[in-house]
Length: 248
Image 1 (cartoon, rainbow, N blue to C red):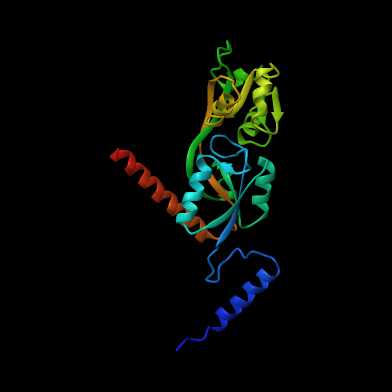
Image 2 (cartoon, rainbow, N blue to C red):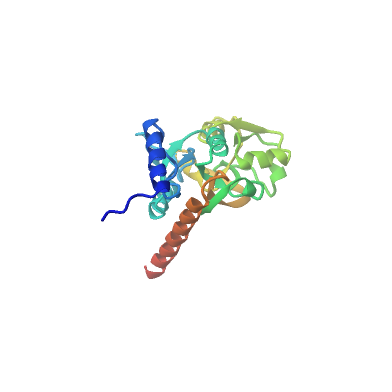
């Protein structure tokens, strides 16, 4: 004999039906586990970027797809300018950003899944430059391209750099450097050499300012179960990858 649904289950089904009828996609499944989240990302090659067909590619985009599948978490992935995407994450409980530098200042403002990679930032110049830097203050006399809102930019501004040239997308720094509008490029340790090479420019790292972990940063009100499942899937992935390397 088929068991009649409980009152709680029946009400949950009715509620879900109302949401679907209203054209809304419930963020939570009937058993209370969050089933779908929204992830914003930016153009940060080669880790995540938009291809010529509008798809989002990159090493960390692939990684988040893999661990989300293992964690039974579905998501919508959108690419946006950094500030716009981060503001959406701050204002929506089921939103995350791929990926943020996990700094001491940011730590309490998000729930984290990571580390996904090790990154950081430094000062780059055209290959063959005669500029030498031994500390950050040595760069203050040079026009330095930097991306608005990035941690690297904020920290170097706070350090008193008087000659930052602010751009809104990192790839704009290529032409700025190539045309002589800037002499230095404040950029990611992973992304800067890749972006430069893709546009036919050779750069060299003059100074590493900081190294930091990259992690998925989620609104602090997100379901903790989602974070736990993603983190467990990431740890399992890393363990498997390490084992594969040892057996090769």
